[in-house]
Image 1 (spheres, rainbow, N blue to C red):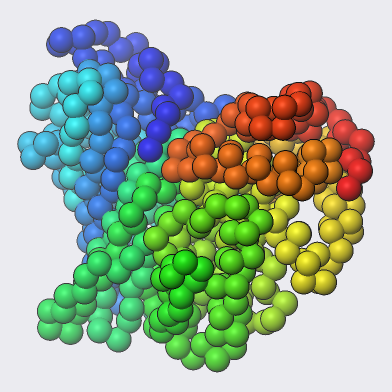
Image 2: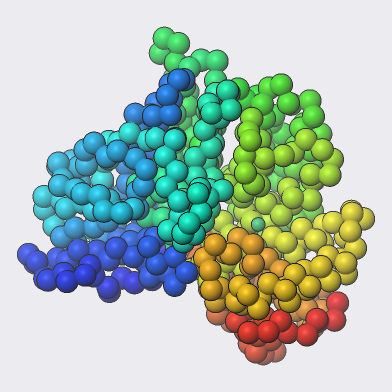
Length: 468
Ligand SMILES: [Zn+2]
């Protein structure tokens, strides 16, 4: 939930309509991904239904969007791609709609008043075989992101990978990290399969040979880290620090190999909580290992998803994704130019964990990250002003990590920890920009690190390697 970046902007050529209502902007104003996000409203929650049937990639689906208008709206848009929209209602009344590129544009029968809540109900057909390539990466056959439909691999079920700009293949949404919302999934599957999703299992109901699972998140989460998956999963439960309920889902026939890694989640969380000095931000945590293949490790909120978690050597990546629950999910980047806040912190604490567990000395991790940034920055641009949105997941790690390493050295561990805790707690369940981070650093440390941080995030050249 959110700061909308371009509230004032309106649709192209929009004239004032009845009562001064205008169309909402069809962009949220993100420099790197200008085609995602929409203006004029702030989403509070999504409630998404999927009816999964073996043998077809299509699912009868529904999405309920509860939002608050931030201007008087004559029409508004949502991000939606690769799906067939059947009907749309706004506040219970049938609404006119059209699709245009990756936008679903809705014209309610009555204009929406600024400051008022409104509800959109969309009936649609979700298509797991749809893989429209990201407009950010032209020419690419299909991005690593999108639906993972295991049917094609002769298995059953699916999983989601929305980051950075493909989550709106799954349901109509305001697909930008600055508009976080609570998410509910209600997924109906045949009895031999299990559905899982972000948050906590709220309800299961059975009818004949089919079961509906309802999961919901307590807190708002960014759209690019939604997860809903169906498969032959078994649940592994546990208890984390402070009694935090843990639950993980792994394929039944792979549980033996994966369980030893999953069993470390509680102690990893305790380690991380101590480092950051603040409690884990959500109501539950765990790992999902889809029966795969799944293209990446992704910090899906409250339930990180891993393509691979079968070996003891897979544990460092678990800490990286866990850090993202703090930085990236609970504290989300205000724009995609602030993605280093997410990736830099995740890698930094991940490397510190590896150092303490004697997997790799911190100095070596930092030298590797430094070399990577030196090579990458010339072609890709600085992490806060990337030339190519396709680099947003790969080129934002290293600079942030080395910057944080140098910052820690310059102010000392005790002050650094105060900074991190203060930053996290100030922006928990909100959004933060690079400037927001700089402000907290300067205030808590009592020194001015503005030039140091800006050089790392926006400088043309990699700054000198800091002392560690
Ligand atoms: Zn990451």
